[in-house]
Image 1 (tube, each protein chain N blue to C red):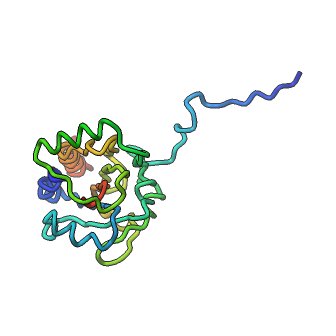
Image 2: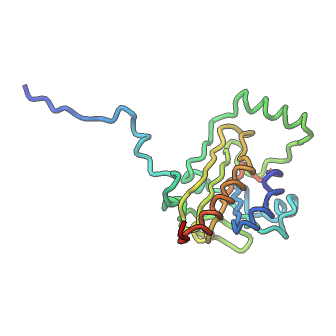
Length: 61
Length: 141
């Protein structure tokens, strides 16, 4: 009997996320995200010049 | 947020630019800058009402804020912080990322509840570490 054994990672798909990871470059999705400033829209990546702290606020409250 | 704003001069002195990303309407930007007295600070304030950047940063947006959030709100009230009007997505949680000069993420914090804020001292310590690394780069030891 020929059975195909499908190998899956017991740790699940979360291990293959391509998100923000320490020591790795800012992912493209985040760099390409459009944000709006007082002077109009920007690519978030264009604002990352030199060492930069990006703080995401819950809201403007 | 107040804690971080107080440390902005230190971050600036360390050569770290700061970008604040909100998610309220663009019309709320000016009021926020005025309210937080950010106009003369070395900080860029932008907003993303679409929440696309928040999703790309993998920041949580739970369907509701639970008991922990209620306890945090009571603590804030007891400490004298009265909540203002919410200009943005009330369910979206925040976070912070520190990116070095080579574009690598060297620190991140993702809030697990509304009161789980980034520790500004952690950011300043990481900034100092970056500065030491930069100045030490290329030197013979």
